Image (cartoon, rainbow, N blue to C red; front, side, top):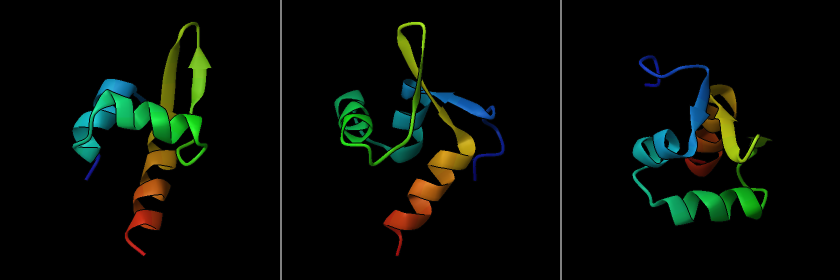
Length: 59
């Protein structure tokens, strides 16, 4: 599913994968539903974290 993506994703890439807006991704991060690390001034999400999030949403 995510084979074409790097191990660390940008917010924009997560938006594309989840088919949601940036606002939604930032809300998920803010609400601690989606784990992210802030590097400089931008959030990064590991592919593994995103895959776990997707699995949880499908249960």
